Image (cartoon, rainbow, N blue to C red; front, side):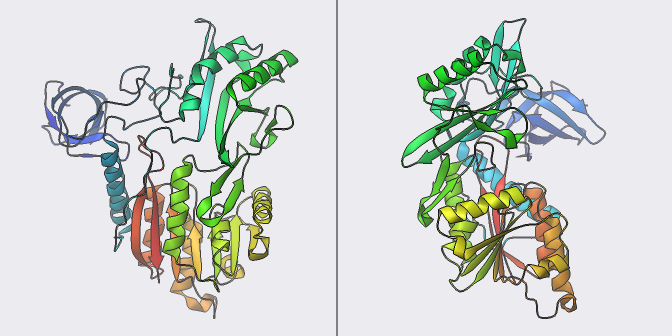
Length: 454
């Protein structure tokens, strides 16, 4: 076991932003708060036969990339906010770490090397989070309310008074929200507040979704109205699941975000899945379409199309775009967005269980010259496996042709690497380019984009 008096040399960072070192016995030690190149002492919290995990307690040689955290609630101490893991590392170094995580996953899990590494997509490091789920808890013993993210490795809510990854306006609302909830009759039945921000015609709209386990009385509703008036926010109520969300009062302004490069307006509800970082999403959509190199006479399939984040921009460039998603309700919302942008004549949307794809189902959706694939964390294994089967045995579908190019947008490097392994090593594609996408600065979350050609 690592002794606290032992000095360890940190060699690298893992995907959870922990420093990796070896102790005098050769055992791997994962160290929270340590950076590559540093010499540290640790206190061990967990130990297994092949590894140990601990926290930094002393630092003898400091990394040149170590910086003071930008938020007073960041740290390793008890009660520290668990929303960020990398504030002690310079943001440019964070991006480099994520690029390396992508490369390592592609090679070690998929046996794939990208022919070209693109410059990572990055943007503002602070105030970027336009979507967030804030936990709420009334603490009777303290007579106080907590609103924010959970503490590091804890089910408790951090005592947050500000948050620099949230837009300044929302960060400034944390203490007023605590006072509001404390004043409400149902304060112990309000488990969360969800944030969603939109930007329409140059005006930023802040929507707050209050999850309530019991119906709200008129007094509580009036408190919400008064808060909305004082702080220029829009209240939505969610009594049960996400589909039950509705405006506190009629007449609220529609939420939307724009993709100005393509002239697209994307309306959404505050509980819809949209990217948390609108700036990065705008850049990502532009890069994805440039990498896809769509021609105006081509048919494209957008797998896991969501509300049409990629489908509608693609429709401005292609002859026809088929968007496929797992939910009929979501598909209907995509159709509405296409009509709103006068692109319904170039788009078609269908609902399909994308986690149970077969070669026959894939062929039934028809030939497409190019694919855009943007799956959740689980990846697109069934889809890619069906494609690989068809490529391996063309007799399964005589005359059907696989797409010449695929752009795969990923929110989990491990599942991207798994799927890339099938595309390259079985389906006969080349991974021609890849890059990290820093959608969540100061966290260990790695998004990425990769290009496959056949």
